[in-house]
Length: 236
Image 1 (cartoon, rainbow, N blue to C red):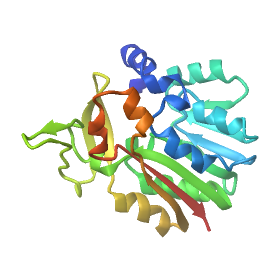
Image 2 (image 1 turned 120 degrees about the vertical axis):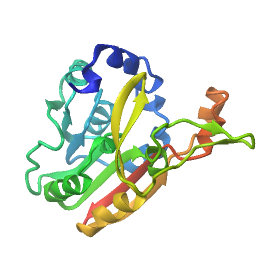
Image 3 (image 1 turned 90 degrees about the vertical axis):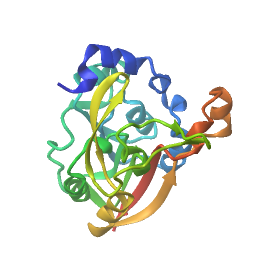
Image 4 (image 1 turned 90 degrees about the horizontal axis):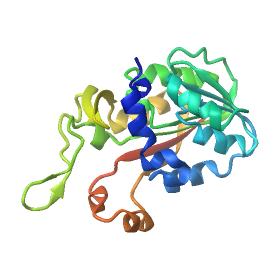
């Protein structure tokens, strides 16, 4: 079963601040400028969750196909945005028709994928020439460690990085549940798509804004390492 379909996990996720909408997600101020110039075209949203990004792109004139393997997430997405084409399907099982989309987008889903190279190949196939791949992923310095939590060594707060070059599964705890994430290096995430014929256009390491820090007292520890990475590529 998809962990997002477990009742207690889904309830905990629904109570998270970011589940209230895009403006509540810490990465949105960094991500939104990369999407703001989009007007129309065909979009594939991989791991769409509640459908917030699919709705944003749909309201910018895009025809969106949105995939997620969680029945619970899609039920909520369809309730909120009934006009969007939501499909309950694993992103590795999708057919990826050739030269179909102008944009492939994914938010915080790729760190669950072991065979990222295979997924990048499918995405390259389905994008039209000049099409874009934009995705957010947990930063490699964050996924490298099994215990994704800050520590204090007496000299200050720090985030331990261990086994960075040992890629693969990491069993960690998220919202009180054990989940499996896949660690990939920065080189994998950047050079993998470039090797397939993509051109890197943007690389952004998400940092908290001054407003976010003011609204979340005591969270200055989030300035000690980037939690998320945003990458934008174009198919040449």
